[in-house]
Length: 423
Image (cartoon, rainbow, N blue to C red; front, side, top):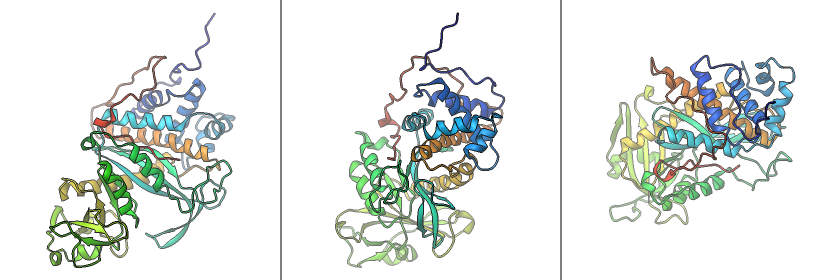
């Protein structure tokens, strides 16, 4: 007589054995990241969903994912698993961040917004929003993602969905008027500070905002190295050698970059076709006096060296950063990391369903985004292996003991904190 398996036991592998590097990575990540699931069938459905995100043609809707299983009842079961099943997406995201940090220390953490266009208004968080880059009003969801960024690998590890006031979904928590996620992200970044800030990977806030100075100023006192994108129109005061605001008055960042020699600033050739200026500044806003930051601005003399947008000023980047010992070339590399994440969030994100959830449920959106992030990691790790000819996956499959504890006992003070976003 067989003994029933414990409901908390790590379930066996799916019947099909790995036939490709992508299959190996899928099994590896699902077994490592789903250990918080209390039920074996949740593990099975989670792996089915991840595989469907990787293989379903077209839009990664629950219905299309279910079609990959050739099971008439799969759509209903997966819908319940995503929208109603009581599993904790926070635990899976923390496990993903831990897994990546364990493989390699991140070079930075990148926070960036993602606009998800929607044709209707029934999905959670949908509202009309002005997009400065295009000058248009767009109907859709606004999400903030936190990305692990390594030397050659970037993966989203957490998400925050902006909810207008009042909330558009009865099951979603209410949001304060004007809240765009900044307050929650900053609070969690504050809690991520450790006694050894010199070992923390930089935070790159890649969202062009007029309150970039607020972001940097809130994190700087904690010793968190941070770099925040800002518009070239942001008003600043240059700081003189004595540490006081210059008598030149208020200047726009784009004016400093246009004529650095007029202000006695050296120009740095940080990469072929890219020239940069680094200046000590304070934001020209009430209450910001004495908050000294660095303006890092770079202009792309070679159009081929720039992968940004279009329009006036599209070939220049403007950033505020905390005072650090990093050189202009170091700061340029951080902007390249942000550009890589932006590119991959469209390319790889489109292949793994980051913008494809069609339901109305707030919890469902978060669970879908969590599993889409796992699928994103699978695809990225598979591509990384493909770039190393003749070598298989970097980490072999390892079975966890059935009584394995929740695997987050890790000293993040020496590898950079896996920051989390509220939502």
